[in-house]
Amino acid sequence: MLAARIIEEKTGLPYEQALQTELFGPCGMTDATVEAPRADDRVSASFRSSTP
Image (cartoon, rainbow, N blue to C red; front, side, top):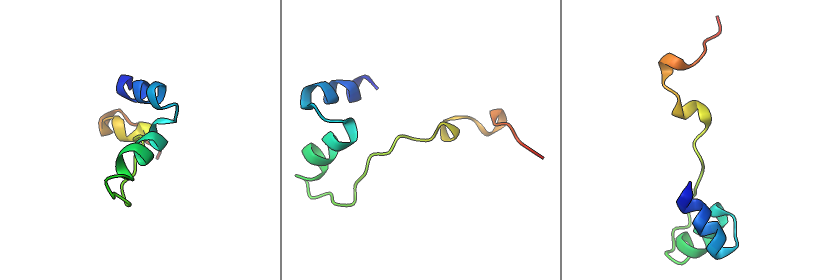
């Protein structure tokens, strides 16, 4: 998160847009994306609530 914030401050762009315009675009990486993982993806299955 700190690196993302630094990138936003230095470029003046949102993190995802900065990576697209400053990194992925110039490298020709047209299919590359940046997506934050959903909260559910970061929680162990044993800690997820289950509904019957």
